[in-house]
Amino acid sequence: MKAFMGDDFLLESDAACRLYHEVAAPLPIIDYHNHLPPRQIAEDTHWESLGQIWLEGDHYKWRAMRWAGIDERRITGDASFREKFDAFADIMPQCLGNPLYHWTHLEMSRYFGLDGTVLSRDTAAAVWDAAADRLPRPEFGARGLLRRMAVELVGTTDDPCDSLEHHRALAREPDLGFRVVPSFRPDHAVKIEAAGFPAYLERLSAAADMPITRFEDLVAALERRLDHFVAAGCVATDHGIEIARLGAERTDAALTAILKRRLAGHTLDEADIADFQGAVLVALGRAYARRDLVMQLHLGPIRNNRSALVRTLGADVGGDSIGDRPFAAALNALLDRLDRTGDLPRTILYSVDPSRNAVIVTTAGNFQDGSVPGKVQAGSGWWFNDQLDGMRRQMTQLAQMGLIARFVGMLTDSRSFLSFPRHEYFRRLLCDMVGDWMERGHIPPDHDLAAGLVTDICYRNAARWFAAR
Image: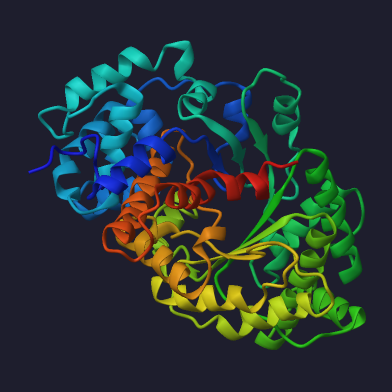
């Protein structure tokens, strides 16, 4: 029986062990998509306790605690962080089989030196004290935690109206040791059907310093803010797409008429919503291509399903799930509309529904044009799928239906500064897969060949895409 999460955790062959320990483990991290607050990096935030840094904004943990019967007071309520941590430690034995179990223990080991300690009610006090000893140290601020994991690039997720003041301040620090770049996330300007759309356009108008009364104005304002992002180091953009829509191609005048009806308080029909959203996405895609920015499309969740949570806590607090709406036709049509005029940017596609992996991979294959290797990517296992089965399934289908050698690899998609061992989790799994291919004779027994593949997926491909500027 192997030791719990020992040196060869997840590595089931000699080839896999060699690939991980000699090749993957020493590589730096390019975390090109996450939700870390740039202010906390700029201010080098320190946390008062493990409860605060672990539980203040992590909806993965919140969902597990609710599932285990913990009352909301000890999850997001007014209980102390020690009470919340104790509740989390108490339910940890119930998390066997959930990636939280592995993530938690990787973080305990890599940040706090708690190798071999298993979190439970019995060990909670010792774990709390070990973290309390380290967190006040200078190297355990936001910056030190990133350096500890050899992070080279942090791609945050930012609204077009954001000032990006913290990104600019960080860029002026020559000895920072890593880059922090903004990513342009214009969802609020695309989703014309959303309740807050008119108010958001007022914010965008103020940020862009121009009135928005026509469709052309909206595009111009977004491009003005996009240039603001590029000046601050932006290399990628991001869209959250719950319902994939691409309507008919309409004139600017017709799109302006839709916009005016919405701003006047009218409810739009589905055709108008699809026409407008498709037009904004196409205009933005062309703007991204002109600036050589990566476009990321996150497809398919159903968000904020539990109204009681939304009413008391707001959006994005653990009430989201996998959606089952079709998106293949609309997605292919969107990429084709950009591609046929030569305006398709480098693109990464993610599906929250694992049954759509093959749709994502084969759609990506449709739009490879020889200009950039892997120009359209099948993105890593996202959200509910960044666990062993989900990541293995995504990479297996990418290898079988596309070219895994061009894969830009893992990202945390996280709000936590302790989440970077997830890259190790991914790397160990990848090395086990490639090592198994060697052991079974599916690929040649050539360590250098396999090492090149692992290095490309874990680091070089992402560095070429996101860190070359």
